[in-house]
Amino acid sequence: MAVLNGFTLKWYVELFKNETILSALYYTVTIAIIASVVSTIFGTITSIGIHKMKKGKAKSALLNINYLPVLNTEIVTGVAIMSLFAFAKMDFGFNTMLISHIMFCTPYVILSVLPKLRQLPDNIEEAALDLGATPWYAIRKIIIPQIKPGVISGFLMAFTMSIDDFIISFFNTGNGVSNLSIEIYGMARRGIKPEINALSTLMFATVLVLLFLANRKESIIKNVANRM
Amino acid sequence: MKKNKIFSLKTLALASLICATSIFSTGCGSSGQGSSKVLNVYNVGDYIDESLITQFEEETGIKVQYSTYDTNEMMYQKVKSGSTKYDLVFPSDYMVQKMSREGMLKKINFNNVPNYKYVDKEFKNTKYDPTNEYSVPYMWGTLGIVYNKKMVDKAPTSWDDLWNPKYKRNLLMFDSVRDTMGVALKRLGYSMNTTDPKEISRAEKLLEKQKPIVLAYVNDDGKDRMIGEEAAMGIFYSGDVPLMKGENENLEYVIPKEGTNVWTDAICIPNTADNEDWAEAFINFLCDPEVNAKNAEYIGYSTPISQGKNKLPEEMRNDKTLYPDPSILKKCEPFLDLEDKIKLYDKSWIKLKSF
Image (tube, rainbow over all chains, first blue to last red; front, side, top):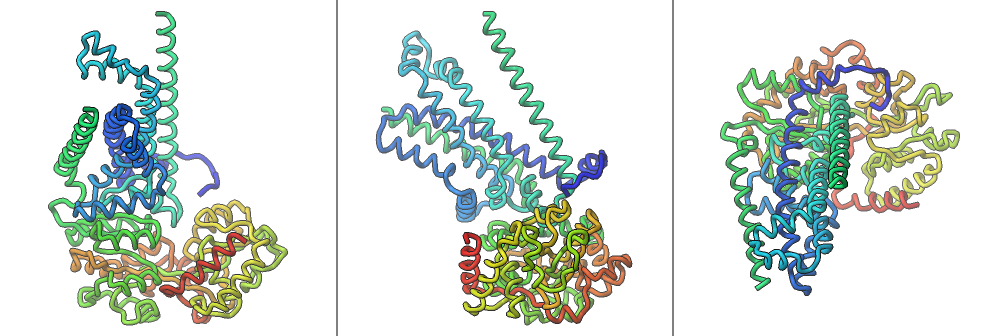
């Protein structure tokens, strides 16, 4: 409860004894990592494809489809994916939850990579090919490095979206697989356990440290670049 | 040419998706529905003493897989879709009625539940399960007024007190149609399950009048607000009161003299269940007075099994909040599933909220 009565480390100990919460944490992190990596790869490939399409109906249709999961209410998306999986007679559990996460994360990656692609000079890869690069080499060494900030922000967005999501996870998980958001919402009706508060502080601290490191890394890179 | 490229990218993406799926289905599948059989229990979070699950597993050798949900409605959607097979669910009264009406529940074979004899007879042949075929009561409680002794000068005794202008901006009501509308209906002397449009619209008018006094329509955050002394009075479920009192000793609970809603959460076997025998064994286990007492002590709600109640610590057993006098319980009624008529309530509620 939200009243501060004093300080104790007891709940951190309890947290590491609570198997339900730990397994939920495990699934949350595993799914977030896999889903964000996979959707970053899919999203980047797809946005390069969309970028290279001729302007026309097909392109705008693709872009509009891409907006669907972003604009739709989560519950509609969640129930729709659930129906699809049920129709395909899939076993609900880790796989279905992971696929649904990849599904709703990918559009965000596409949306953050596309603007970066638009900033590129029109014929940069033609120039690379002219100078003897193979297409694969040109993508790896020319395109990807230039759109990297978009890819990274897409990845981070996918990662947070995946950790944050409750409704889509809820409808697409099966027995024995639950993530933190499902556990926390499950507890909400009866009051949230102090272990969850302990976990929240730990997660907050981790994110803070990661952000700090990321920022420092950026400034280090800048310094090196300036010297060169 | 370009179109072709896109196509190959698409097929590549699709192929890798299929690959990924197949890898995960072989690699991590064991965590879900694996080879060994398990009993799949689906319950509200933190609504069982988890040491009892271990005890059950040790006693019977049945492995329990425990998952959680947050509201009856979410659970209903999930069970209805049939996407995951659950062997046991814990719906509230009106939801038992709705699910059994829609044929979503299996009849319980009470030969496998000998401990059902411990269940008090007031909880048998209930309005939500008149034939006693689909459900076994799990926990129960009432809806009432929680007030802060320091902030009110006279303890409320009737629903009328929730309309007292003295407590302007000092009152919490539930952000839930049936509960808040039910309070108004009860104050007017009507049934909380009425489907008479006139009575419903009168209740709506009454709530409109109350709106200037209300500080907020709350959900679970209401508990924190009462503990933090943001409001003098509010409506709450009896089961949450011991927890609130533990945090703030000025709080007190009262059931208004007009009567109120009495709710029951029940245990049911959904149609999708694979292991009915095991599910019945688990129900039987939960009805055992020893186990029941331990569970009720952990959860803090009222148990429908007197022999379990008698094993509770004295202060819990004699708590008038948890176990009110039978005389007042006679005036209480459960919420029933109103089928289509619920739309009347929804309409009034939307009007009230946008008023």
